Image 1 (cartoon, helix red, strand yellow):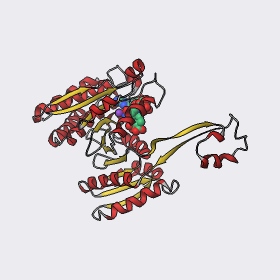
Image 2 (cartoon, rainbow, N blue to C red; image 1 turned 60 degrees about the vertical axis):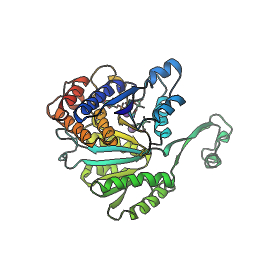
Image 3 (cartoon, rainbow, N blue to C red; image 1 turned 180 degrees about the vertical axis):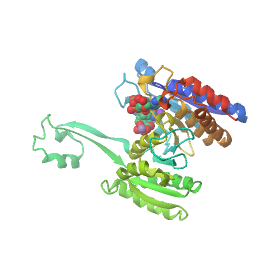
Image 4 (cartoon, helix red, strand yellow; image 1 turned 120 degrees about the vertical axis):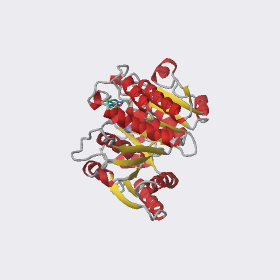
Amino acid sequence: MYRVASIGGDGIGPEILVEGKKVLDAAGEKYGFDIEWTDYPIGADRYLETGTLVTEDELKELSAYRAIYFGSIGDDRVRPGVLEKGILLALRFYFDQYVNLRPIKLLHGVSTPLAGKGPEDIDFVVVRENTEDFYVGIGGRFKGRHHADLQVVRDLYSVKFGLDAESDAEEIAYQIGVLSREGSRRVMEYAFDLAERRERRVTSVDKANVLSDVYGLWREVFTGVAAAHPDVSTEFNFVDAVTMWFVKNPEWFDVVVTPNMFGDIITDLGAMIQGGLGLAPGGNINPKGTSMFEPIHGSAPKYKGLGVANPIATIWAGSLLLDHLGEHEAAEAVVRAIEGTIRDGVVTKDLGGTARTSDVGGHVAALIGF
Ligand code: NAD
Ligand code: IPM
Ligand code: K
Ligand code: MN
């Protein structure tokens, strides 16, 4: 028996998570395990009612789980950033889920916008660092340069606009990206271990030509980790160029490892080449702690409650969850059942079909193990 925590969250989150749980329960029935779900009412509704994001008690309780199944967070009634930082990033950081695993794989039967490319061309994994970079939350907004709490920022701007530094008309903001040797090393080790079980190629994506302090450190660490894995071939790509290569030559990639913010951006592009955000799963992994599995898309508020959202990304994230728990056969069966469902044409509007969210979940569940 596995105990798994579930957090539906906002927008389409709860609807798609129901389908994911349906499929994982079906997989358990077929492959001989039970999942005991405990749902946590974390999200915009509770925040608007009570002002609570995540409590200390909840964090402690959630630490007892190896896996959390997560929908999505984000709501138009709340100022952008409050829920995203106060819930989603709070969980990723609290549990030190330093690996954000995002497979980019074109399933059979799905069409990609990339002309001439098929499932054999689009099959790689982005390993996104998940706890550092511009996500560390250090920054500030200041009216009147002299109020800025960082001397270098004051110096930089003291001549730039020739305004009175005390004037409230002068307003600046900054946000700091922080990388550490250990934070970079551990996620790269994960990427190389993964590559050793795949095609033994790792691409580092950064912007060391400009942001040479942070990403210079990143490159130096990468070179060291690469030297310890001589059986894996490596390459550096700049992030701007990699967006072109993802589109032009996706078959080049096997494992891509990248700092947090670039990882966020290039995985939405990755999602699109694998057929859309409705198909892209992710895992926030701490190999020794509490991990969390979710679709990489957000709460798509315009679809909330309409029963039209595609649950496949979430169901596939459930497959990553099963894999994480060691249920490899069941995990593979879930992906096969997703492919079967697509083959049967039981797909939502984003994939050109007319099926409803629950039809898709039900169909995948029924196909498990066949
Ligand atoms: P989004 O991913 O929610 O949606 C972008 C668009 O993609 C949607 O409008 C829709 O057309 C499509 N889409 C996404 N998921 C889909 C699905 N399952 N089925 C069909 N179509 C789907 O991104 P956004 O609109 O930029 O953000 C909405 C909210 O979600 C914001 O509050 C944002 O902060 C939040 N967000 C949360 C997460 C997360 O929980 N991990 C991720 C990204 C964005
Ligand atoms: C994602 C999202 C999040 C991120 C936001 C909502 C904090 O875009 O999961 O990709 O930037 O990581
Ligand atoms: K999500
Ligand atoms: Mn994102």
